[in-house]
Image (cartoon, rainbow, N blue to C red; front, top):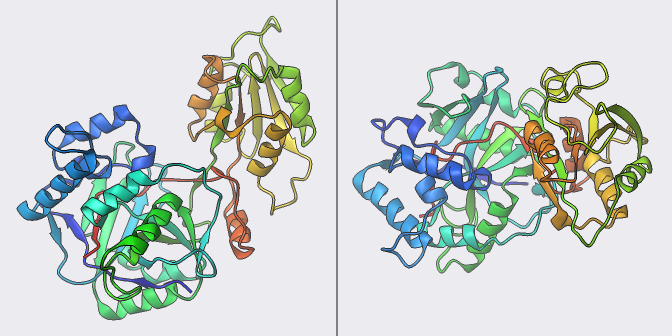
Length: 419
């Protein structure tokens, strides 16, 4: 079973407004967004989370280390006096909150206690590893899902009190943090947390990188004893419908010149696995691009239909000048998620992984086809919490990019030093 424990977090001094210093996790920040966050404040977490090159340093990780040490030395960030857990609640404008506990999770190879929930796309982990080597700190938490029933009830009353820290991000999501240092409460939460497996929801690469760093650290703390490289900062939420908002990740396909696939080929490939029902066509029936406000047969635009819930639970294939609803032929099989079936359909067209990109933004998916940046797109359905639980209990992984958990914990609410 997993081991979870408190740590003495580093947090921004109360005189610094959190709104201007928090930022999203590194892997969802575009270059333009990075500049926006960097310009907000010299103390913005982006300067360490996603460091920039600087002529005064041989690489950007040395720059991050210098900034990190300066923040500690000048009191920009301060250590909490006692080992603590941190209740963390995120509330978007729609009012559906996600709340969990930030603590230190013992690193171990995935198995019985730690369960990855989806396959990962291979990418260079050197970036996060170099940041760990230089700063020796967990700058942002991984996100875990606990299978322990009733975990959320242990801190529910606390969430009704005045939080220790509050911030509002650029999307209007309210982020609230409570410091839990009462030993009895801490021990009870850690006990329940350790009673059931924890599924890695977000941050697979950071977990793998932390595991690699623990293996190479010159003087790592013993696993499970105190703070050190043998643990990683984790935000853990009880796996339940009440606590989770899971959004779909849409597929965009840009065909290579070496793969001359026609629109008819694409439709036929999906017909193997789905009922493919036309949703509309342009006025002339010619190969005109769709715009993101193109109307369906019933006069409602595609994007407004999704945003207003009328297309919820439906999948759509978007081609130039054509749209089709996709209805799975085996939709009652909960242990096969939509992303698995879509991957099979794409494989019959010999479309390599490199020709597929991903976005959680509906408008961006539709616009990519309209603007010719993608040859076609598949608008996906959200994976359900029950599917995530079923896969976890079976110790199976979903295909890459099957789930998008939202909202995202903000970097800067609390940091964790490895020593």
